[in-house]
Length: 87
Image 1: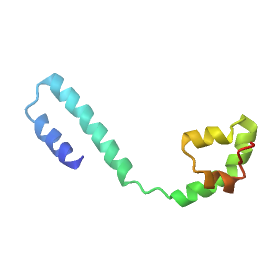
Image 2: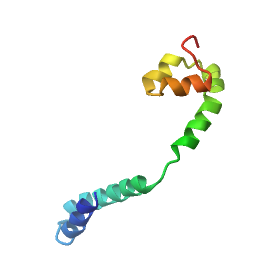
Image 3: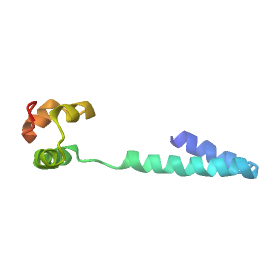
Image 4: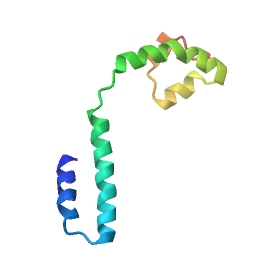
């Protein structure tokens, strides 16, 4: 992404107005993506929060074990959250 960002910056110097518009948007998109990649996410903390709130949320909203699994939540996490196949 950094390599492409450099190429975009170079292309901006000689681009016609329409191409410049597209390059500016691409630069903004690349900068946002780089910021997102640089952000550190504490997955352990997120998992703990999920475990604490998933069962009550599921009960209120009628979310089943199967729906969570289809979304990609690991079965071990659902078990820790107290969500079983019967829910």
